[in-house]
Image (tube, rainbow, N blue to C red; front, side, top):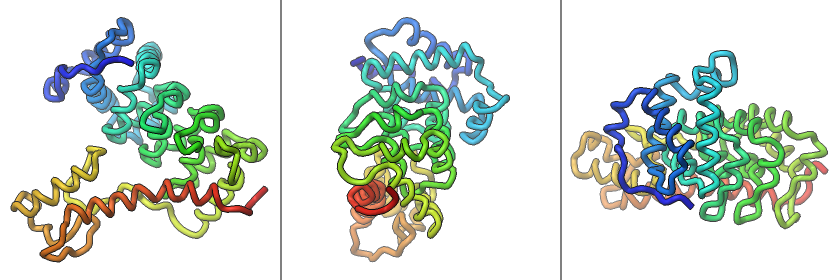
Length: 303
């Protein structure tokens, strides 16, 4: 696994670089493939590079899937080779982009990477593709499904024995566009043959049918809707939310909101606001996992 350098140009210096200079960083590491890779700096450079080409994740997706691709083919191939090399060495870069990046960072990763490469990267009981499928914006997910393909979606499992497809079908913000994309990748017979690693529980077609029924009764939930005055980009949400609440209590710039918790509810004077925010976040993030477990274990459904 590549060692991660503790030193690098830093975010401030990266912001002064042109898109040409940012691209040159990736070209260097793609060609030289040194043992020491400043993954954190490169993850920042990734977002800055694509933010220089596109105004939003939506524009990037539309452009790279259509005729307005602003990334020349040879440069896209160099970036793909860089990602491939990173995945072979443990995937520290792709994991950093997935965990800490914004919408445009993840959308670019979806559109540039060979996603089966991410499926082969294991981290903390899951794969980089499982992480990306759960973390990306729902507008990006249909592209992920189409680009990942059958093998990556059904043939790689996390520590619970769940394929990437089951992770997607268990998300609370699953949308009709996701199911349409799944329907283009798999036939009904192919879905019927997809199961957990243990081969126990429900198959892919049963879970797909249940997801269809779920969408008919309610709109997709927005998993990232927080009633807070400024955006939270750091994926260490417990610590980030706690620091925001402490800032309010100290009379910071958003102290006037101290009477309300991060989920929009009222707080009592003697309540532990940081703990309450963390508990609510944990509950929200358990929901997709609980959905998957429940869907796999339940019997019946379409056969």
